[in-house]
Length: 223
Image 1 (cartoon, rainbow, N blue to C red):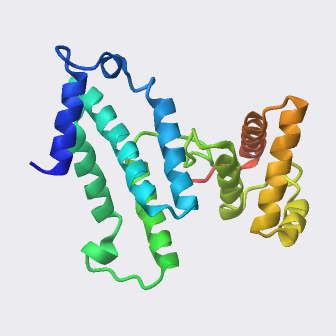
Image 2 (image 1 turned 30 degrees about the horizontal axis):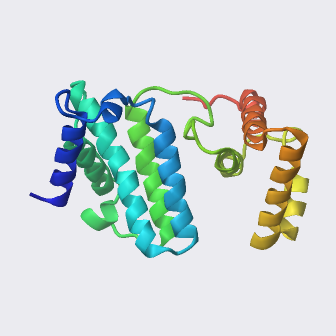
Image 3 (image 1 turned 30 degrees about the vertical axis):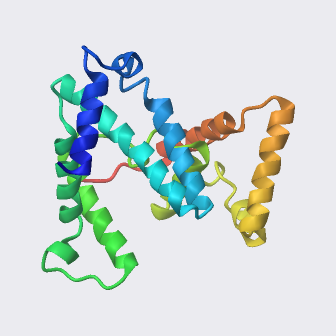
């Protein structure tokens, strides 16, 4: 039996109604969300510290979250772990025609451009969604969310004048390096804490406001 099959068997045993673990039996997709966030955060910490031995351990903790969710879905008759693995494998092959097909790409920039084209085609054939910011994952941490919103504004040349001070963004960018950026963000977080403010919530609300203010300015694309 492969290691992944052993892990799936262990999870099935933990979830079993007879002889299983009471805590594992009680969990749902929703109740596991915080666990997933915590485990991913701990993995990121090992990457930041280049701590390879503990990275292996934390990757296992992230993997068990995937196995856990897949097991719950299997019990509910929705999908199983093999379905998850099969679907992502098919996606990887489909989005790398330069590796698995006849096309050839020579740079990372070309790969990203092709990836986005294929992704756009897949989304067009998938569930309908609206809005120029529709590609953004809805539950990103606030900093990543704000960065992604600005990326979309730049990438699509969206009309953000009066919503975002682009000149100020450019001026700040010229002053920053990794150390000064880290210091400024830390000091802002500390100042927010001292003032009783939630920096994560404040940034998320503002990034969302930027999206809502920019969106109505975008002219519908003619078909």
